[in-house]
Length: 125
Image (cartoon, rainbow, N blue to C red; front, side, top):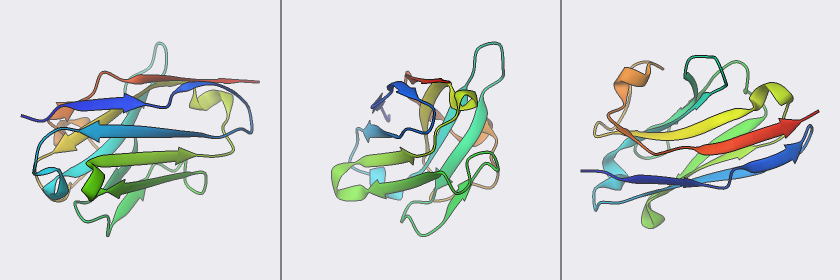
């Protein structure tokens, strides 16, 4: 069983930055691929970014490329999402997700079996 706890959300002005963290339980975190998703009010949950078990490969949604960076520190059981140049359309609940596989084949949330409770990010204009 994997438990995920997100932190780092908050209220920020457009153009600002935030760093989200996701702390995972379990001794096998280093073998899990991880992802970040978000859900805006009235919208479906969408993929934001993913990272393979070693951090050697990352992917991003087109809407965040060049502004967001995903990373992980396996020794700390933690995955991060650095968000810069934030826009009001980045507002939503951000979820950390994990799969027990070392990589993921698509950006679908069905790839990931474990989820955190989410952290709210609000970007004001």
